[in-house]
Length: 220
Image 1 (cartoon, rainbow, N blue to C red):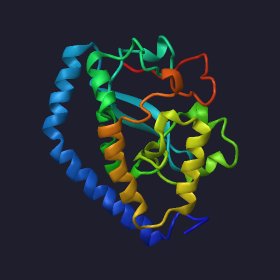
Image 2: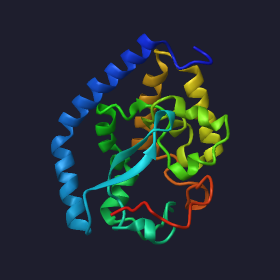
Image 3: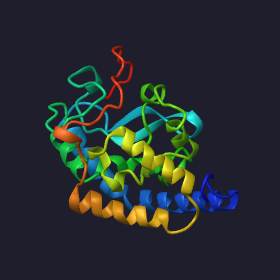
Image 4: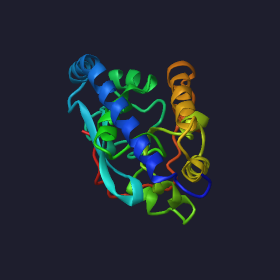
């Protein structure tokens, strides 16, 4: 339904699908998650999970779940908030997790708790949202997703402005149907087969705007 984010009944059904799939996914991934956690602990010092504050629906803040892929307190070193293909802060296990998109799977917890959806605009950082114009803020009208239209359309190979345009299109044209299913299926192809857009142009991700000098977020 153009210009809206779907009827209440459609959104309720979307939520029910999120709960069902995230619950099944977390049950099936229990053993693999335990093995990944062990690999992360053996590979480098620091916690298994990376928790960072992100902006969700209507600007509400929440902490995202990810497997830690970088050294402890990585935000204090190198590129800070940004990441490059040859970033020395990425651990050996972390590089493999990023390559296969496994580091994002713990976000099924965020989906189950209602902070995220399986499909929706990717959650972003508060300092970036502070620079949004009115059009760009429209992407906050839906819950952020583990995957998105922008992810399957180029991911980090696209600039943030291009990704946000796709996010806004998704938000304003979403209705319960095949769109989410198509995005989920294409995500498997992009993440597992082509590895498209893992990093941005010249091997470095687009920061959207320059990050703040005072780094209060930490990965560790």
